[in-house]
Length: 503
Ligand code: UN1
Image 1 (cartoon, rainbow, N blue to C red):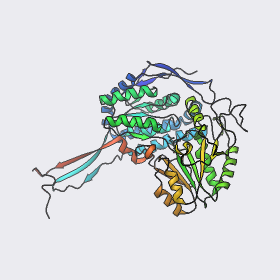
Image 2 (image 1 turned 90 degrees about the vertical axis):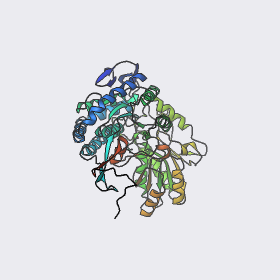
Image 3 (image 1 turned 60 degrees about the horizontal axis):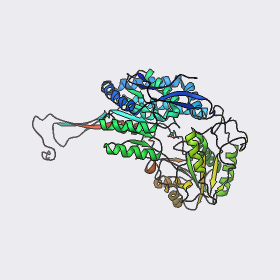
Image 4 (image 1 turned 45 degrees about the vertical axis):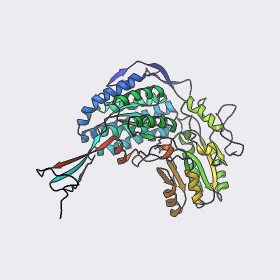
């Protein structure tokens, strides 16, 4: 049994609050961590502490901050297997994927350590003589980062690393059911040499966090909110930020489509649909929602997909499996509701549905108890079905047929999300037409909807977010604001628009 995990603010442990247990979803009787969940005032006091620490941190030259990011990357790399094992134990993510997730933090650090030596501003020509114009990137101040538990370490690093590199302080509130993984990552970050108060960890439930965030925004101690989670909560976070004239970075749900053209390599498409649909037990924001398959290959695709799903390894996430348990009880019961959306006009082509139990077994299953579910493929979903329209965070994929590419694009856009998308085709014209028509922030050609690389812009539109982008240079616009400077050395008052130089 591990000792209790608590919030850390300004380098000090905050041990007030209520008790919570983070449980291994693969073995529900195994407590991974005893956690103390803080109250709302802890969140707002963390934001005040961060405000003071940020002043000093922003004065540290960006290349030096970059060196701290480099140390974080090295520390994470040196502890990768241990961290990945903890992620597997705490949220049930198959070990190979968990290790990949840790790799994604290292990739993020690799990218941003050099950004400390760039973080470029610009020189801009003036319309007047003897005058220079400049732009500077300035840190926003304190970033409140609220993250989900399906990517308990990589997705937080997408916020934390660039925010810190840009000279901000951070108050990070991870998902409580992933508190041990978050705490381990927090320890690696601070061990790399971040001064106290620059990165603060607040362990709290959602409602308390919301309350704490509301007062911090009113006090003016939060200047940017980064939120990864459901569309419903993202909407509430967006409304709250809007009242305080802030534009948050929102990374929300997806109903990610995969279009399979008649000329597609069907085996490749099946492999992609298997990983995108059932990797991470379908609990990525980039997981596959609906396969939109051309009617001429619909039957053959379904036959091969159903066989691949039947043969997929499901069970103990510490082993070599495609799919482990769902994240937590709350997600499992919500997923059971989604199963209730299956209608008489649908055909389940994957065999049994629901929880895997001795009475509802699955061949080759290697788990014991735990929140394991049968992977489900539902053919015949229609544009007005909830299964077609709504995100179903969990192992269920809908299938529908189309005739023309225009119709496929329309179907793909219909649910109004816009995170990831994919097309399988051997014809570049179809691929580019799809790219031009799809409303998603990310498009894959002959690849899974999930598994974006850590240095391309990541983010969505519509119900998937407010158009903000993470990763690569694009995220710098979330964590810095442009400051414009003009310097007149003419020795007289030159008035813009009024004293324009004549030829
Ligand atoms: C998420 O589920 O919130 O592209 C992020 C992917 C991963 C990140 C998923 N690199 O699937």
